Image 1 (cartoon, helix red, strand yellow):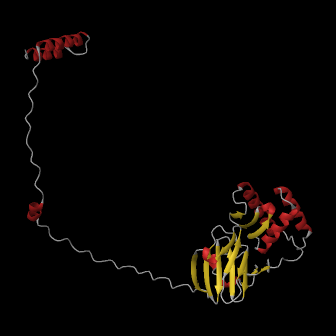
Image 2 (cartoon, one colour; image 1 turned 120 degrees about the vertical axis):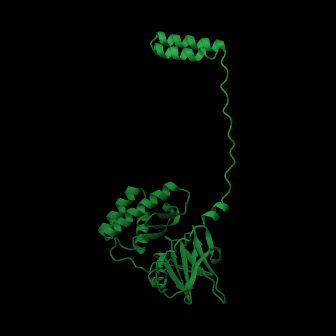
Image 3 (tube, one colour; image 1 turned 135 degrees about the horizontal axis):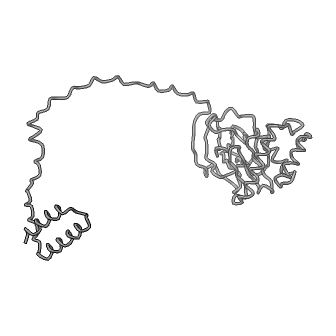
Length: 289
């Protein structure tokens, strides 16, 4: 275990009390963050829901994937420790970049290493949280972009890891090569992961940018003379219009005329209309009898 400085011991104790985790859990996460450059971490601890990974900027996955409360606490803890690593030196000596976990089995060897082959991977994949090699095969895991890259004899193939948190590597020994990985779901075969990119391991030179060609302005073509007679002949004929006769005013009954005269007299008595206006309208109505 990496020895802590006085600052490191204080940080672990304070952060553990602040977030409600044990100092052992906080120490293990601090080691993982230091191995990831303070920006990402792969961890495995019961208090964190088992295996998980974190990347600065909001990416967090834990084994207990449906426990959103625990996920929030682990994310807050990672951010707190990442900030502490920027402002303090918690370790007596710098943590080794050759962080590895190894286990032997009948099918091969599972291990992680980091720091030896960082320059071989495409830059768009980001920073590898784990890297390793066996025989002529090299691999790297990029949790921030959810990618797994393999370099086999100078040919790089990139796979989409989805929600798998890759924590182990296994290669079948013998005539053929059978590559498998370990995640929170168990054994993961390479054929289970969708391939997203394949190409040579040598860095790709940027292509020459296309030359912007500006079209020269064209000379406007004068409009052809318009043949008015031809246009008039081609135009559709106007719709036929039939004048409708003006309806004759409806006949007014005597009772209606006398009723209007009474209303007009009432308006005259109230000085709403003048006597002259009343007489003129009266003469008009009487003429209809």
